[in-house]
Length: 376
Image (cartoon, rainbow, N blue to C red; front, side, top):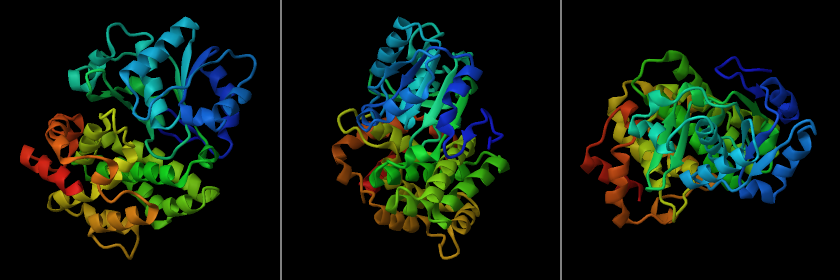
């Protein structure tokens, strides 16, 4: 089937078989495929090489870091130009897809990447990019249907790039590509998708269709126990299908914005020494922010609790903590190597993050500090 939303992703088990057809449809003859060392090590990049027809000439950049960097974007862009590519494929998790978006942007835009960040007023500067196809191998970011990309710059800041022109030209969503994902990565990615759904619903922007999509995503993840099932049995077809759909829905939902969880995780994700997983950060931070927002979101906690299941109370923070424990998420940021002396720098980054534009309750500097301390 095809989802009738934005870039109309191909969504079905075995959809990866359509890759040559999709390349041809969008006039791409010489794609640069952006992936990561992990996928290369388990033979996933070989799989895509074998599926692409000999009618195409493909180049591969397989060094995408866990949190994509400006340096990696420039390396991939150099390879794109050197090999005369005419399109980009992001193949992997959100990092590879975000990197591919940045390469597609800079392949036909002048200046420096930082000039186009939301943080630096670059939203309106982004025009049509070269063709870019997203093929997710995790169920978390939903980057395959979103207008955003996150890149850690050379100055250490993790910046947001957003524009309708950064929506992938096409997306191939094949849940079977996630079958080999280890439980811990399945869990972290799944909590990313859940956080997207929850923060989008809590955003004060009035967008009922996006909110309804977020509710459906929560039902798939929690009420149908798809995340727990996918962690326990990575070959569970129904659970994997539901998680990839919920991931896609999470990104559709956050067209109405995110919030303080993402402001904090972006700050932490900019640390190139710790190299922290974005979805896992969201999982650990979410309970603290839910407690902080509780009296500022009208009846939305009741609606979210209903989507999670009849036995769930409106103490959502407690429910998330129980879920985190069940799927093996860390209990605190300190378990992930974060120390209290990092908090001033983290607060400075979080307080200026664009996700704050749609948070239901904007923390003061003192409240940011308390949120980081509580998550420790």
